[in-house]
Image (tube, rainbow, N blue to C red; front, side):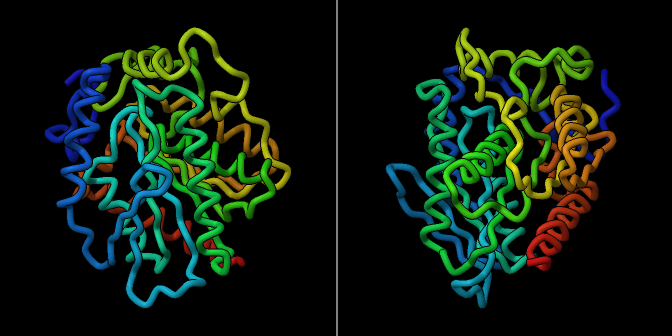
Length: 294
């Protein structure tokens, strides 16, 4: 193999095509698959909210005042949620005792920016309104979902909503077509690569790049929440994540940065890998610490 991917992932990660046709197929088949994926240890429910499905994962003995975590799934702003996203949400709910909410959002190719951002903001507002006594909120997102988590926190601050106690960003999309070393190196890596990334941004933004379209271009809120970031070593998005972490630190924000050596983008699709299990534990502990401080 061209890249030094850890043995835990070599036989499981694949090259993910990114085209309008493949995205439309995912919109048909992924939701069907998701309905039949179990969520052990929690009660899973789904309902339509503003015409979009929203999944809620509730652990046993979860009261109305339990913390709420909003999980934005990745997929290049175009793929529907995958089975492992449901597993991540369920495991976080079971491990933390928090209610975890995973909203769907409008997807490419039919819905470019700012559709997904607006849906993320609406979902966050809805969580605050539906669970006002919870008071403790968090956002988490993987890949493009990481972008939505940053959007949601920023838009909550701008709209005067309760801010999340922590943002968890997993190998996140943050910058529009950055010219970084990792983007130059990883042009054909599995799961995600620079070629797919360029296609995504072109489909998402077209030829114009609005000032606030890329999360890394947003001004930081006056009271920036702590940020937990995981960066996969063999990922074209690595360097933009590292730059964002450095910017946050320079501004005085609390940043917990995890460099996942030997891992490709989306590595946690291999749920049984020791590295994935270690990261799931770290995510759980970060949420517990954030909520314990309140």
